[in-house]
Length: 356
Image (cartoon, rainbow, N blue to C red; front, side, top):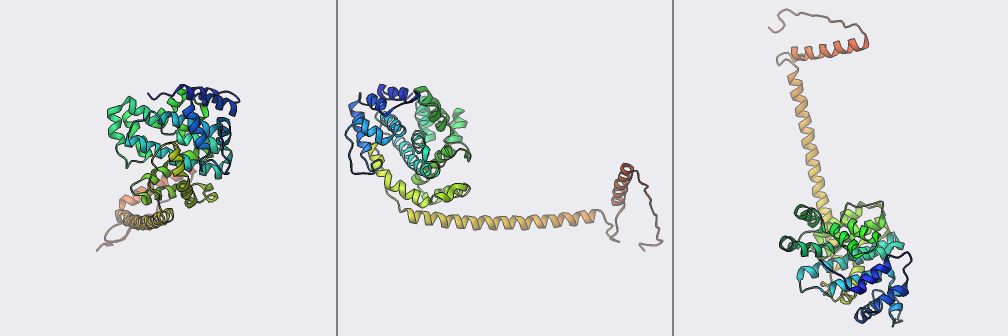
C-alpha cells in the first residue's frame, strides 16, 4: 500500500484538529527542508502568486496557498516523490492535475468559499488507483493499460473485477492516512452520479470528464459528452466552458512543473470547442432524425394495430360486427348494468337472405 512520510502524517494530524493554523502547518512542514523549498516555490509560482512579491518562508508560503492547497501540495509531493517511471502513473497524476484546475475554476464561479477543499479533493480523487495497483498488480495492469477508457467506464470495470472502484478505495486509503473526514467523503463521491444538490461535490464530479476529454486521443468527440453534461446543469450559465478550458491551458504548465510532471502539448481550445459543438450539432440532428423515424414507425404500427383490431371484430363480407365482438360487448354491458343496477335491453333484428 502507498505510505506517507512522517511530515505528511504530522500535517494530516494538524488538519484534523478543530482549529488548524498556518503556523502549525508551517512548523510541521519545515522539518523537511526539501518539502519546505517546494512549498515556497509553489507559492511563488504563477498559479498561486498574483503579485510580484516573493515569499521566503514556509509560513508566508502556507498563508498564500491556504490550508487546503497546502495539504493537497504536501500529499501530492509526498506521493510523487516515491513514484516509479511509469507512463500510466504519470497519466493518472496528469488527469488529477487537470481535474483539480477544472474543479477549482468551477468552484470559484459556483461556490467560491469551497474552492480550496474542492481543489484538494479533485487533486487526490484518483489515489485509490495506486492502492488497487499495489493489491492487484496483474489484474490492474491489463485494466489500466486501456487508456481510451473514461473514468466512469473504468469505475464500472473495477466494480466487476474488484467489487469496488478506485474512488471508494481512495476514500478508504485517505481515511487510513488520517485525512479530514469531509475530504475523504469528497474523494468517495468524486465518481458518483451527479449531485445537483451539493455544488462542491458537483464541481469535483464534473472535473473528471473534463480531464478525460483533455487527455483523450479524440478530444473533440470526448468534449461533446462534457458539453451535454454541462447543458443539464442549471448553473452552467454562470461560466464559460471555453474560458474554463483556457484557464486550464494557462495554469497547467506551471502546476505540472511544480509537481515535476511533463505537461501535455498545448491545444487550440477555440478550434477544439468549435469542432465539438459541430459534432454535437450533427449528433443532435442524427438523433432527431432517428426519433422522427421511430415516431413515424410507431404511428404506422398503431394504424396497423387499429386495422387488425377492426378486422378481428367485423365480418369480412358485410363489414358489420361479428359474433365474437357482439358477445364481448354484451358481456361488458351486462357487467356494467349489474354494477349500476340498470336494466339491459336487447333488440334482435333478423334480415332474411341478408348475405345472398
